[in-house]
Length: 322
Image (cartoon, rainbow, N blue to C red; front, side, top):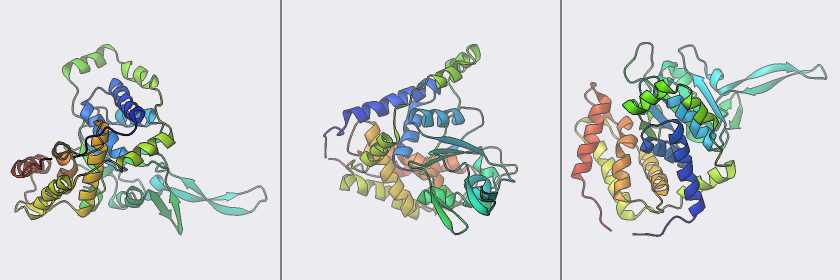
């Protein structure tokens, strides 16, 4: 097993400072912040399945601010059209009095895009996000446009309220590297919000940009150099294959999901100050990578039952030793 430290101590320090800065604004579980950052470093996307009003938008904005990324927010509704997200061609008249179509970029053209309540949009609008999430590009008419680099979608949906929603299909859920939850704050943190209602905004305004586009892309490239031992890769694949053969599952983890699992495990290891993945990284990330990719035969309590199933599978797998 490789035991050397990451190559850039300065890069590691900047990542730690970014996490601490975001935590100072949104005092949620720090591991949730780390996982969201890990997904960005692994060039993935995150789905937050949570009740409204617990800080998901603030977390996304703070992440973009600290990392020096452009940010846009789209409120998904049933009447939202693909062009409202991607952009559209508009007929314009130039100085020479001739007319031509010019493409006006939609809100998808940002480094970090918050797709709020994504399951309230129609399947047509949801599917318009697939090319962007898979290939960091969008196609309108006969022209393909590259999206900013880096690019990340942070989507939200309410797990309890389903009136007027369109459930995300498995093909779209599979595009999300992680599914996370913020949850309610502690009683002490919530009391502080009541006593100092402008604390969050003041903390956000005081956030300093820690990264440039070049340093952030360099951190993404550093993820690819994190070592994944063959034994750990076999451990990850054994877990994935068990989801494909389990009698309680109609659908297990895809190959795309397995690749995403390995990438985010590398990013997670980097954030922990290592340049190698250990089995504990796989165990810690498994519920957040796998649960939304599993389709249970039982239609009740999908999220909870899937989490219990993943936990049970992990308990049955032998842990590889160095």
